[in-house]
Image (cartoon, one colour):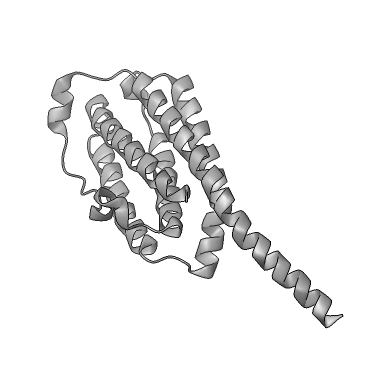
Length: 186
């Protein structure tokens, strides 16, 4: 009886470790597609005059994001989840001064929510196992970066130019997100 239970546990472990990479690969493809759709939706929003981009500032994107080659799968998932969560939070703020289509923003929020839903089970598992190397530190740096974006919007009273600057930042973020999905294809 004990041997049979042990055999079942060993088989379960074998299948779960081989199934995980497959789910990572599928997750990577889904997230890459969603990031591209999100970028496309953001680009559909009308931009404002070039003079608004003169108002931009250095929001201090974490260095780890500029050199993403050092991420493990687990780190990439933690970072992607945090970025999506923060972007979602920003886009739920007052954008009425922008002239943006509410339908496009709603579609973008639905896309972001879907991305977070796909990542969340694996993100929770990683956090429970504490199976990450640098993701936690990067997440802290990301929180500071997004807090800077929020402070900027608030200090500019969510005006059209401030949203233009933040929109450019978010577009750049989606490029980073797409590059992080490469770590989920292995």
